[in-house]
Length: 256
Image (cartoon, rainbow, N blue to C red; front, side, top):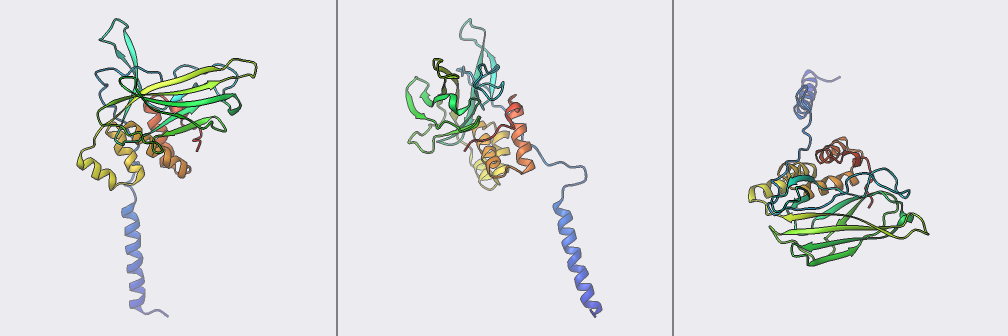
């Protein structure tokens, strides 16, 4: 039989475990913070583009959703001409070689080729690559990490994602594309240190709160690929896309 002191020691150890567990739990009624994207001020020069609005046409698509770039889109008054409003499609990154994400709605058999092009503000092409045709409709990633292309800070870059499609063998090939802009910014030392000391999920939230779209999206997309059953990752992914009115894409598969 256990002595009084043995039972007391066991109860003390149990109490410590219970208290530690309780301290790790959120307060009653408290919910875990969801990701919030804070859009930065639009560029003065304008960043006209097309991320793929409207509905998809043709019988070679998996849904009514069109070819779409996963990037913010905003209508702004065009003060430099009489054209009225322009649609600005752009986002920020903090890295030299960011990733870009696109929803491809077409079946593999209908796609002739996919190409990604990156240009300077002066229309000089600095990167051009063929993108692997996804086996099924879904969200694909274009990485600059495997190229010598490096983005300079505070310089706008114009990208194009082009898909050549033929819905039927006898039909001519049509070109569908989306376009937008990316700009690299420097992070201050304190923000950079905070990001380095955070988990990937926390990093995504920090990037989003500071308006760094491409980095926030990439962190969450990577987490969704490796932790597809994580409820917080799924919720944050949905909320991030909802901010830019692309919540319909939240359930679309990520194609590796």
